[in-house]
Image (cartoon, rainbow, N blue to C red):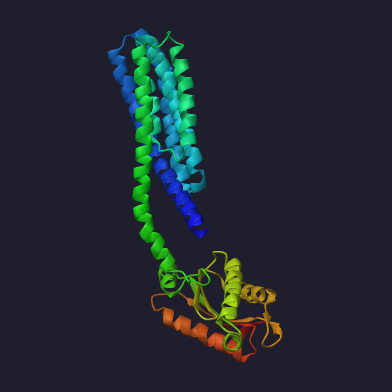
Length: 373
C-alpha cells in the first residue's frame, strides 16, 4: 500500500510541475502574440487588398487585446504562486487561444480555402502539455467542432485537406505525449535527489526535522532576523521523566509516546516556527520575528496540549507532561546560536527544578524569571 501511495504522490508532484511549466509556456506565448499580432497586421496591410484586409482587422485587434490581458493575468497568477490553479488557468488559456485561432481560420478559409490557422490551433495541444489523455481528448473534440465551424464558411473539405487534417491531429497528439513523457523523465531525475535529501533530513520516528534538517531550515531564518534586527528564540521541550519511563517499560512504549507528543507539537506550531526532534524525548522549536508575548503563548499552548493528550504515565499514575525552556534575544551581528541554545537549556533546567510541567524563559521582569504554569 505504501508503494502505491508513493507512486501516486510522485505522479501528483510530476503533474504539478508540468502545470507550472505550462503556466510559463502560456505566459511566454501570450507575450509573443501580444507583440507579434500588431506586426503581422501591419505586414498584411501591405500584402492584401483593402477588401481582403478588412475582415482581419477586428479579430486581430481582439486577439491582441486578449494576448495582453492573458499575459498580465498569467503573470499575476504566477507571482501569487497559486499553484492549485495553474492547471485550470493554463487549460482555460489554451481553449481561448484555440478559439481565437479558429475564428481567424474561418476568415482565412473563406478567402483562400487554406487551413493553416486551423493547423496552428491544433498544434496548441502539443505546445501546452496535457497531463491526461481525457484532457487531450476534450481539446480534440473542441477542435473538431471548430473545424466544422470553419468549413461551414466555404463548403466542404477536399479529401486531400481531410488527410492533412488527420495527419496534423496525429502529429500534435504524438508530439504532445512525447513532450510530456520527456518532461516527466527530466523532472523525475531532478526530484529524486531532492526527495532523498528531504527524507534524510527527517526524523524517522516522528517525521519532524532531525539535526541535519534543522541546520538547513534555521540558517536562512536566522540570517533574515540578523539582517532585520528581529527577535530570535529557541524553545527546548523535554518530556518529563521520559528516561525513567523508557527504563521501566521499554523503548517501544516510549516511541509511542514520542510520536504522540511530536504530533501535538506539530499541530500547535502549524508552520509558525521550525520544529525538530533532537533525540529521545527532546524537541526543538526555533522562532524568528515573533513578539515575546506570542512566544510565551505558543510555548504555553505546546505545554497545555501535551498535557491534554492525557497519555497515561503508568510509572506514576498520572498524565504525561512536558517542560519547556525558552532562550530569546534580539538578533544582531554579535548574536550567537550556541549562546541562545545554552540559554534555552538553562531555562529548561530551571523548569525542571521548579517542579516540571511548566515554561521558563529568559525574559526578565525585575530580577525574576517570567514563569508560566
